Image (cartoon, rainbow, N blue to C red; front, side, top):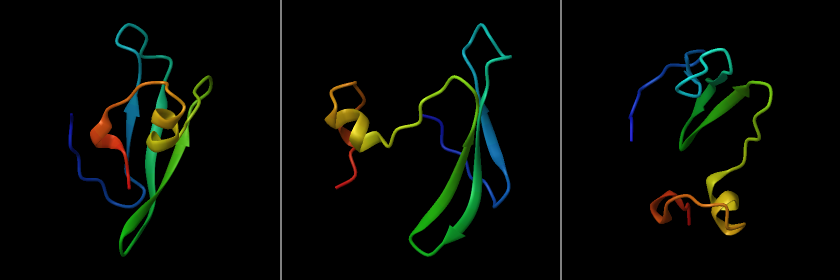
Length: 67
């Protein structure tokens, strides 16, 4: 796991190892007490909250589950 700190308007770019042209940009849109608002920008990606992803049996890690 990579842990980063980002400020509002800052982001990170995710791409497949062998294809840096296929990108998903994740940006911090707002920061409020108890949470953050995130924006996702990228074609060809489906964005699903981790708890839903796990509940549907797609995979993930048990520690990702937000209860």
